[in-house]
Length: 399
Image 1 (cartoon, helix red, strand yellow):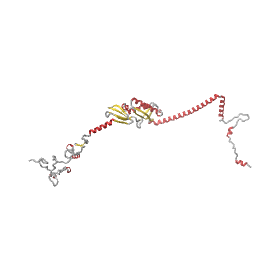
Image 2 (tube, rainbow, N blue to C red):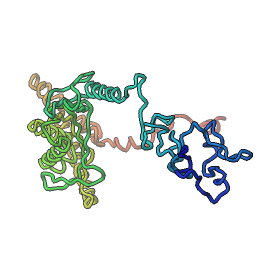
Image 3 (cartoon, rainbow, N blue to C red):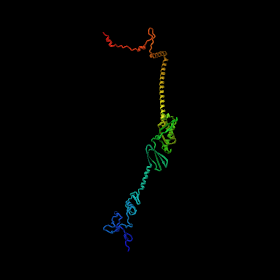
């Protein structure tokens, strides 16, 4: 007669074990804390051979100790030894919904209606991208060039503007009102240029410019900034080659700056560069470093020569002014002489004799009964007698 199948095997005999605990029906490899609720241990003291919980399915495989994978699967929501980490059939057990059935795969929680959040997230990103690429706010000093699939479409001015989203249309924004400066040379290097009289000078200068047409600046030249630098260098060398060393280091500096600015603007306008030159300023113009001492000596000698020339010109101007004054006085006297010649002759004779005789010490008198010569200089040099009487002599003379 065939009875019910034994839970220990086909022959109805329990498997033999070397340990007493297994012989008594107790699973020593199963942790005590994993015993399901309502199930009594296989073998407890005082209850030998107690039956297993009839509500649990019979185990077809022998018990084994939990491995590391079983421990991680248990933490993810499953049970060790069940061959999965999803905590139940189909992953619908008590596991973490953010973890997938195959391990730590991140899942988004579903919406209340059971649908996924992914379409809404993609739609939000699309709206954000469209808003960022279609609305453009430009500052007062900025302008923007709009291109449609790489071709020029228009220019945006300061304020809020709208375009088609990228990649249909794109906007490139530039500052068009601020003054930009290029310094030549960059750093402390020496920039030598040849003057018209075959002399070398070390020249430093700066160029101020800005953008006047953003469309031409963007599309006409491949490298507009580099073009401005090269045009400035060529214009300055051409202007220095037209002047002498003294003019370059003296009063001709303003003329050179004006010449360079006009020359640069003509060339850049011919290139249709969309650049406006605001000004050119020469910051330093010195001789080369190797000949600076000799140049200082030559410059000092030139300054001394110029000082002597200035002094001679001042003396000549004084003499010229005195001669002109004497000529004007003579013209006045001659005018009076023509009106009354006799009176003018006598007056001129008296003034001349007075001026001449006032400088001599001799006086000659031609009159009868008088001494022809009077020693007036000796009389003038003799000290005058003191008219005040001596009080002592007056006292001695009284009786």
